[in-house]
Length: 421
Length: 124
Image 1 (cartoon, each protein chain N blue to C red):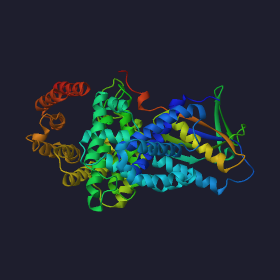
Image 2: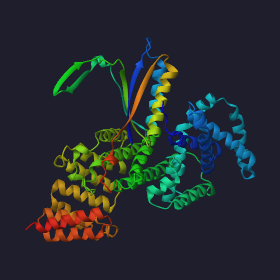
Image 3: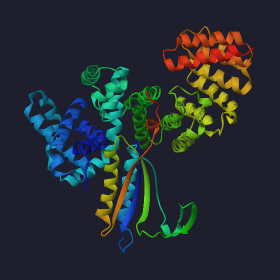
Image 4: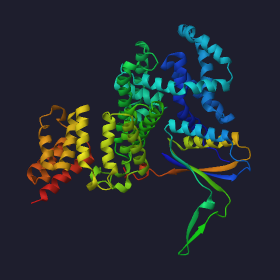
C-alpha cells in the first residue's frame, strides 16, 4: 500500500478542518488571533505525530481537542492572558473532562454557527478591504501567508502585516465574535459577499497559465460561497452570488484562445463552457428567485444566465438582458452597469439605441481611463458604418488598457475597421 | 482541481446496507457539500442493468451486463478540492463510514483528477 507524503496529508486535513477548528476556538477564547495561534499549534503537533501514528479517525475532533489543551496550557502559563483565563478558564476546565465523543457532539451543534460568526468577523467593516480579504483567506480558507501573497502578487511580509494588523484591529476595537444583530445583518452580509466576490474576481480577471494560485483564488471564492449557502440557505443574495460565480466560472476554459489572448464572450466556443457549473449556477439562481426579489448579485447572475441559456450568441435573449440591466441600474447604479446596459440595448434594439446610452457616459468621470468605454463605443459605431470614428475609438481603447493581450485585441479591431471601405 | 471518484464494491455482505450506514453517508455528503468540496454524486445501478460497448479489431460489440469482472460500481462522486490529498481524505472518510457501519463490506475507490482549464492553458 502506498500512502502520500504525510505532510501533504496533514495539510489536506488542515484545509478541510481549519476553519471549523479556528471558529470553535474563537467561540471559547473570544479572540480570533489567539484562536488561530492555538489552531496552528495543534497543526504543528499533528505534523509531528500523524506521520508516525497515522491520521486519527476523526482528525477535526483531534485538532480541536489538541488545540483546547494547548489553550489551557497557554492560558495557565502566560500572565497576559490572565483576564481571559478568568473569562473562559472555568468553562474549559469543565469541558476538558468531557470525552472525545461528547465533545464531538457538542462541536457538531456549533460548527455551522461558529464558522458563520468567524466569517462575519473576518469581513468586519472596521477592517480595510485588503485586511478582510487576507484574513478571510487565512482563517476560512486555510491558506498560508505565502499562498495569499502569491495570489495577490504582493510580498509575503505585506500580507503578514495585513493579517497582523487586521487581528490587532479586531482586538483593539473589541469586535465581538458574534452574529450581527438583525438590524445590521443586511450591511454586514453585504460586506461578506463583497469580500467573496472580490476574491473571485482577483482570480478570474487574471489570465490563466502564469501561476496556478491566481485562478485557484476563484475556486476558493466559490468554495466560500458554497459554504455560505449551506450556512445561510434563506438569503436570496447568497444564492445569487453563488449563481453568479458558478456561471462566470463555467466560461473559464473558453475565455482564452490557443494563443493565450482573451476571447470575448460572444466569440467564445460555447462547447467549452462547463455544463456542470452552468447547471449548478442556474439551480442557484432558481433558489435565489424562489426566495424573493433579486439583489445586485442575483440580477448579475440572471444576466449571466441569459448567456448560459443561449446555445449560440445569436440566440441570446438580449431584450431580457436589457431589462435586467435596467433593474440592476436602478438597484445598484454605476457607470459600468450603464455601459453594459448600452451593449445589451444595442444588441436588442439596434446600435443607435446603444450608442445613445454610451454617448451619455462619455463625460462620466468614473469611466475616464476605462478602456471598455471607447471599445463599446467603437463597436457600436462600426455597426452603424461610422468606421473612421470607430477606428479612433479602438485606438483610444488600446491606449488605455494595461493588459497587453487586450491591447492587441483592440489594435486588431482598429485594423479590421480600417480595412472596411 | 476536480477529482472524479469511482467506487467499486469487491465484497458485498449478504445483509442489506443498514440504516445507520445510509444516515452516515448522507451526513458525510452534507458535510462535503457544505465544505464546498462535493459538486456532484450519484449511485449507480448494478451492471446487470447496464450495457458495455467495445471497439476491437475494427468491430463494435454490444454486451448486456452484468460484466465479467464481478466488482460492482457503486457510485461516483465529483469533488472540487485543492489537492489530491484532500480528495483522498474525503474518499477515505467515505470508506471509513462503510467500515464502521456495514460489516463485511469491502471495496475500492479510484480518485482520478479531471483535466481543468489549467491543463489547457496557453504556454506562458
